[in-house]
Length: 358
Image (cartoon, rainbow, N blue to C red; front, side):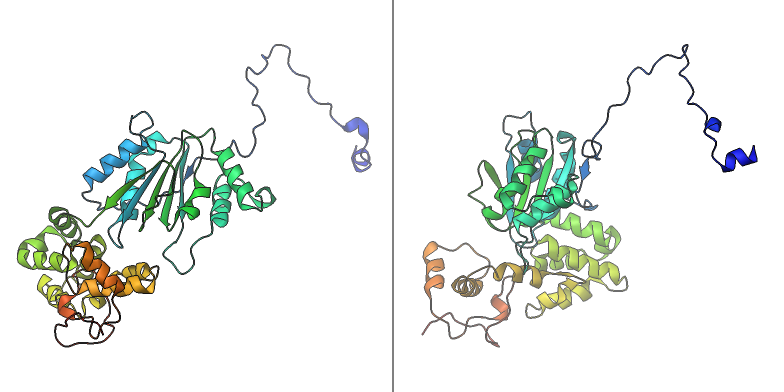
């Protein structure tokens, strides 16, 4: 026997067992399934903000736009607002609340329009295709071919596509699905009026009650109860801007020995407020600077001049005059800088300056 094993005697090979005549055949043999069909649903939404507050009207409006059975449904919803107002937090929260409308998942792409290197639509499509289980040589080279494949993959799906920090319509158009069951949520600092069928929703700073709720939820009710007047003063310095409130709150939670008065004294000086409203990689100044870099030079100059007039409603001729004005002799003063977004002084001035041109 040992020798027959060593020489691989074919007679030793066992014949495959015959199927039992009494055993029932399988009722539903599993069909061959492609790797794409076996892919798990895409769930790319970032973490929700645990202390999200307010925005009830905006959330209700977005929910109506995303509801496939509603009469006001729109395939594309754009949330527009200035730096630090909480566009991304709102869209993430709204997308999670609307997940029941999109059982096939959510795609989330950061277009980085306000960064030094905005993302190219072709690269964004490649990222989306990889998320949809298309990889390697299966991804076409050209933008139009990638967009066509992307639309084909979403044709029979009900998915929500979130495009964060979009800069212009050309950056967004190739990423729009054509399927009726899909919808797109976009955040942008500018109006994207060239997008077909898009509904825009403006987002402003928090209401005073919402700002107080956010600040209290992070800092703690006990500390706020001890110094309610100081809490109001801090929120006034923050201008109810969510980003500024979160930074101020984080500074207080990181320094439990600080009283609220300590922080208020540090940020009430407008000349150093932006330097104080910074922690880690969060900074009000940096957020505003990203928007300023996207503006032409004459628009930046006009914005600096308007800052002298404070946070107030102005007639159109004032804006036009600031836009066409030549370089002012003195165009900045700490006491006239808006509470939430004062810009660095072009020329230092120790007292209030008067806007004038030469």
